[in-house]
Image (cartoon, rainbow, N blue to C red; front, side, top):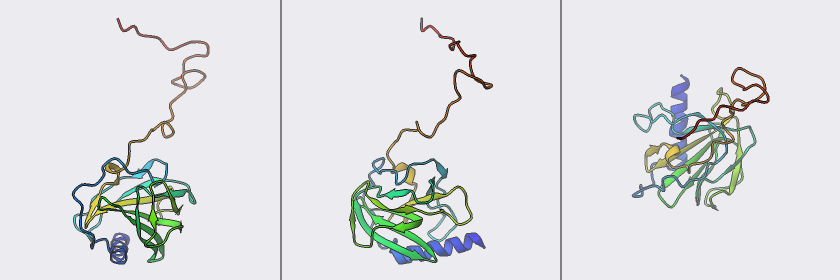
Length: 187
């Protein structure tokens, strides 16, 4: 039941935002889009078998509720509003890609507005209903084809996302205080 309700909601969003009207461009600007929020990917892309089939039409980026969302690339806001009780933003980009920002708590832009890469467009909500942690659902389409947003996003640093065990102090992987890890010679 929940999957069919989500599929119906996706179809309503598609109809409201006109996502099947855009003609695809020759080639998206792979690897050039900014991350709309900073956080780990909580759920990846799962392509649907057809426009109304089940799947996960984007990625979920974990972020606290109220985190500012930025436009991933220059473009024109195609849709910003409520569909089936949830708030969405869609932006059309010059390379023929439409990015979608779903289950947001506020939209600071309106349809027809021009936006630039990195411009605040709204704030995150709780994400998919009943799913933890809170997140932004970020999607991408070219014409009527859903794209994996990860291939559009620029490569970033993982420094803030990976936490390594300390090399000194206590713990199962720590070296005793005052000792250094063994060094290997390259000779």
